[in-house]
Image (tube, rainbow, N blue to C red):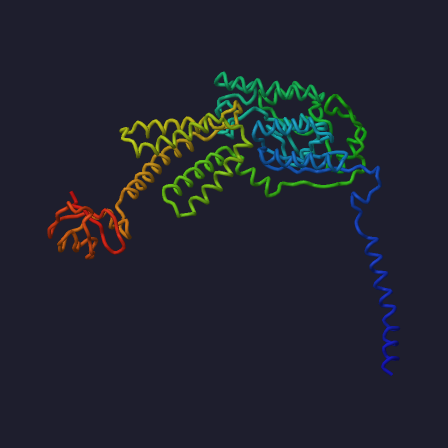
Length: 467
């Protein structure tokens, strides 16, 4: 009876099992097609999304993206960008990577409402394909000093005309503008784009919209989105490194991967700022110095070591002047030395001057965007003088203070003879009465004499007259 019941249940469930198998097959057949599943001749596109200022983090993101695209043998890299500008050196590194890339790069200013100002314009001009979305703009490529991120070399003055060449205030500023103009003009000539407008964007900080950029031949195409861009640039011939040319095959390309800013990029964005790198360097140095003068605290040493390692990594990314770094170290050493050597302030003042000069030179490279805020330098110099003066003075007083516990206290204390006879007796020292013996039979002691401990033999003090 039981056996027949089991057979009947299995028979009843059999259609259900078949239905599950059929549903599974249907789900597998509906799985979205990936780039790996496409026919071998289907083009692929690798997307790199850049949003925000151009800096060392941005360069790292684009550098890794181009390497990944080359490894995956993508047909095109689309650099989707919206930026107000950024570091001049990072921009040059990005352009150089694009020039050397074995995969063509289409820089695409999008979405609508975005811009590729300043450094973004150089990157656009250096790319194999320059594209913009409707409602975007490019330009304003005049180099800007880090201490004034909101205006070009020309000071904000309502009486000054909006158009016309920007007038530099020094020979250095003139050199920077000339160098930037020559650089973007060279990119324009290499990519067969409008060199005259490119130079105008540098010298006059001019900006133009997408239709104007297309009419002036500053860009190659206007596209609504990435698929539209890939369809419109299909069949174009672009110049690659070493004079080679490639005919683009991008129509109907599938997105192989999209690379966005990750934790590493965000970290580089922060520590890649020269001001942040300088602060990390100072925090690291002072944390370790504090740990050296107050051993056993642990926390200052740990914080200092982490900050110093991050600072050294940032200086590896930034154009560091090691003469400036050496001057900062010399300045710190001289300010510490002021507490040990009676120089009447000469070492302290000299150290503060060396520290400030070294900080101002630390990232000096001819790049108008590389430098530390003068107010930050002044503030850290004053804090350094106060911090090191107080820290070292307190540490020296602590080191020179007599021990207050243990055998070390006995060796440095002065005692009084309580009783004495035949070269031995008792002494009162550190609030206790101790058995004592003379260090030499020549020492003649009487009650009330002051004595010092020369050594300790078990529970017996070996003493000598205090004088």
